[in-house]
Amino acid sequence: MALPWGDARSQFQLVRAQVISEYGKGVSNRKIFEALRDEGKISMCEKTFYKYAAMALKNMTETPSGSAVEPPPKAEERGSNTPLDPLSISQRRPTGRFQMAPKIKDYK
Image (cartoon, rainbow, N blue to C red):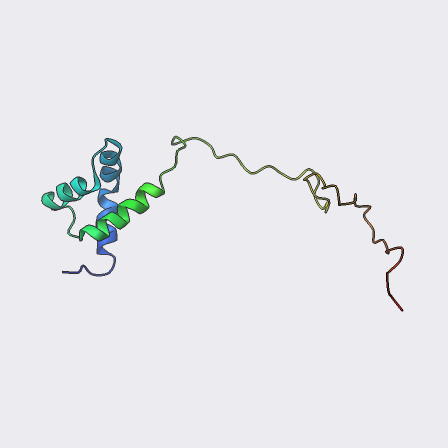
């Protein structure tokens, strides 16, 4: 029988920490699902449980809790339109102003 919309998600959020800790101990998803179902903590189908378990495990980060996230590096100069990467051999150094081509071939 299908659960009302959102109930499976709510049920999983209540046992999410337990699922992650059991998975960290090496217990398979199937055994975790069966144990939670037998305890009466969840009533969703296996497929739905596996979907939410996969999303919870995918969103786990490798950084320890409480560690700061480094901000992205800032550009050296604000408002500068020069590229930060080195130029390839075929590119000229920018002069900051428009330059006309010396001659256009086959122009009448």
